[in-house]
Image (cartoon, rainbow, N blue to C red; front, side, top):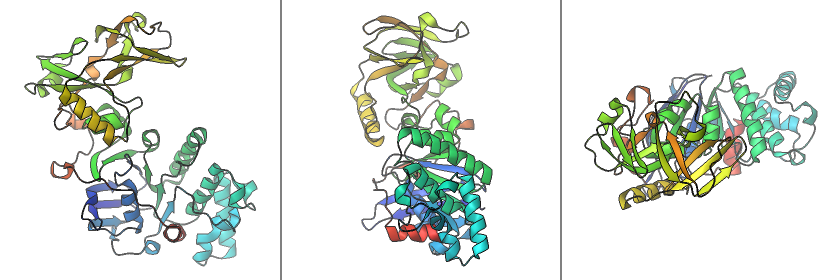
Length: 420
């Protein structure tokens, strides 16, 4: 095992635009680090620079205390699991798992011991003599993981390993990967565009946008204390609600009326003019079924447009009008989030016992203590609790950079990374 240090990493392609722009991340020994963001954010390119499949334009990659910028993949002692498994179709499961050991010249006894230990861990014992073409997607992914496990690697690298699986199998494999990493205690860097995987798997999560690190923090910190509009909109499903707002004293005025926020938060946003108020759907409730313990919020009346009932909960949708500058910021955010809908409507999470129907003029409770206020021009969270926000990039590194296409390894490159 080894720590991984990324120091001011930059990757520029031939046209000069940075796919990864001045990213610095320290992955502790034994830590499960997630790189997350929409398509084109640079996460796969960054992973490929760790393993050595992409050259580093500038900056230092340090693994186990040693600078590895100029080392070939085979000399970095890293085990990588790809999205498309990269298995040899003509070899059995046993031989696919054993391949890196045979390449390293291990004895037959050592090969057999390590393969059977890995197959037992991954519940592949009954499939060892089968070919990859006769396995399910989840089984093939476990074979790819087994090939990584048998090596005495310094770290595991996962490049969107679950994206080819159906939703149910993704959930099962997510749990297996988490248990495996905890049991082995090996340093792991995991790339995904799925924020559910990021929130459930990672010790810490690095959120990337257009090659720039936006925030590095624990999943809970990202959710409760996002540094800007992008992180707030990307983390959470359904995403955070964003509404136009102004502030006077500790009163925030929104399309549905005014709510009171804590004074220490209000002070941070004074004198800023038009703001964007952000609050998550679960911080609303139908006032008629409100828990008696919720006494510190505010209520307002709103006409409900659509209700989606899901059994244990429901979602109510309430449209509102927003000024052009707020609409433009939300449209830009939608583009940054790969089309995640942030239309000018309020999404309210309701208890399953709520009887609110479409067309009702409902009384809605909101816990305004959970509200964030953002600057519409910069997207900055003005009410950020800096003591609990994790790593926030410097002003220089948060400048806008060009979009990049996530790199895709050729089969030969994949073999080089997984076999060495």
